[in-house]
Image (cartoon, rainbow, N blue to C red; front, side):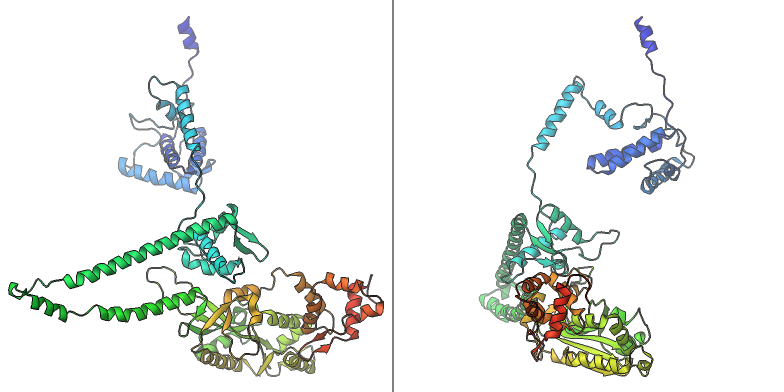
Length: 615
């Protein structure tokens, strides 16, 4: 009876899998990934499940691409293994059946998951499954009981460099307490092996991607727009640990160098020339040879000068100082001046500059068309793939180039006033307008020539810009060449200091030579046209839309009332309508300190206090 029950309970034999080799290889790949703790083990497991369900034989890995969870990577791996299999066993070796004595570990006839099957086969005889489970649970508990180690970024990684840079910046007495992205990337680059701006070959991530991890782990705080980065309390603790580790390493290196130098100094006098005869080994001979030996004091006396110079340059670079002879003056040309827009004459400008032997660099400038930078001269490191990061300080001169037709168009669409306003606020104290007459082109413009000439005169007299008139592109290139050579001579033997944009008012505006300069990255980032604006900036732009209200007049109003709310509150405190209309009339503006006047004051009052449409 029992035998009949057993016979009735027998399961029907399942058909063998048509692709045992592929199953064997995928199972092996999955187990290897599981041992290493890689997440690809789940990818291989999904591919195995799809392959087990497929009833037809596959001739190569490429045919498996029709199955679910089979991508180009897995198919290529199967093809590579198949090629090796044919190389070992011959081109006619069977692939739809395993050789005798070999069983595929991922065979279709088993109803268990391969990982479970392998775990069951590994049980010791006499050990029940329950005991095995309890042992596993104990191991897991032991692993879980371990204390989690705090996150510390790897040395010379992006996170390591960012934390150190923010910490060192916070220790500077007059620091802002935060850093902008471009500023942080530039100063962190020497501390990191990877680039913060260019991804490595075959990767789409830069070292800057680690900042996201620092923010998630509450080590770095990101605020404002444009973004400002600073250390949290936890980040400050971690950064202090990293900085102390850096100091210990430097101290150890110094101790080793001192020991090495001391060892060399001791060994030198004890050195004996073994090529001499035994008769010469008397006291006088030894003393004579030692006297003839070149003294080690000579080179050590000369070397400190070179070392001290290197240390001096390094300390100056750390403080944001460019010493004389360590930088060169280079003309920067906006890429719009070479391509795009009206291309007439633009290639000629570059050609003329090249003919004149001017060193220039074409890049994107967010304000102005030409400016000059003092670029640090750094020798390439033979052990590094990429050249070292150089610092660039912007000189106080910036040029906006206008042809007559461009000037006419900018006046009509309102760009002319906006460009002048942005040039005044860019932080450079000596803006220049380069106006090209361009022959008889002014005769065919939509504005009369007298209007254009008046606009140019206002730019020079009212706005305080220096205006240089030239006839064509050749003269423009000649002026840029002369200016470049003049600035190269002007800044010879001068020490340049890097200052922050917030301190732009500290520099003397009328000084002939300003040696306190902004970095190029901070200058260009602060001149972005589409960046988020403060309430004060939006209020200034609103005021400048009023006819007759220039940038100087708007700035004078902002000195007394820096927001719309403060101005409206001041109107509310006035006793009568007449007093409200004359509230701004006595405000003085410009170099001559003239009053705004009652007419403009009345217009501003009507704009902000009249309910309904203006009459």
